[in-house]
Image 1 (cartoon, helix red, strand yellow):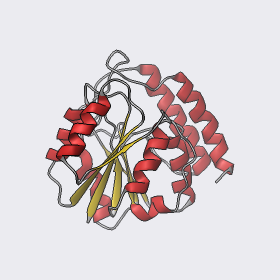
Image 2 (cartoon, one colour):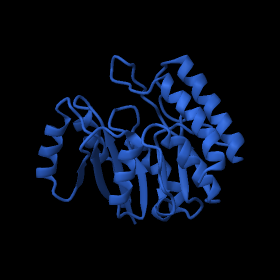
Image 3 (cartoon, one colour):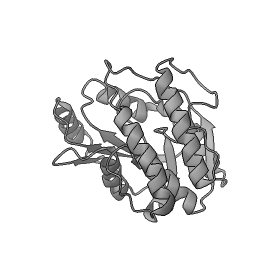
Image 4 (cartoon, one colour):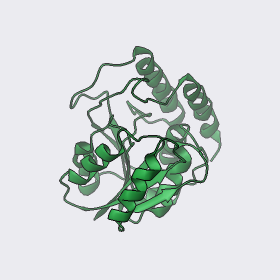
Length: 231
């Protein structure tokens, strides 16, 4: 089995090398494939990627010619993936690649086609950050569950793992953070077997580079309604 690790990147010069080191150092019982998609970074991230690409010609490094958004970067990464299983890894340090084993478990055991991490099921360490982000997340997850008739606890989580055939049957339309809602709606519509596992979370502040804003929450709310009816 091969795991494709898709990393969408935008202006992560301070964390990129650290997260890639963590991804590469985690012990896994499967082959791994790295796919790095730069969404037109302007802070020196591309210089780091160029060095990494030269040092690791087996990695897939993709460069967008303009900033298109996280969903667009993931669409590019998914198209390049050749693994049996695909996981999303943000380029900051909020999520720990050490949780890959927990995510892989239900798939390797033959129980799941899709596995979501959850920051609300317990598990490892959780940094205490923003109350309103937490409340907004729970609200959006609840509304999404009402539209999809599934009972996730953390729809907006980064860590989503898929058998590749799941992604091959889905056309991604949302270019930015609306991706989380869209992929959840389309996975639920496909009647795939979905599991959740607890993960750790090392949230960061806006001063540390957090990018999601209330505008993304408004878009997510609209997408919940939209993808209830639109394929």
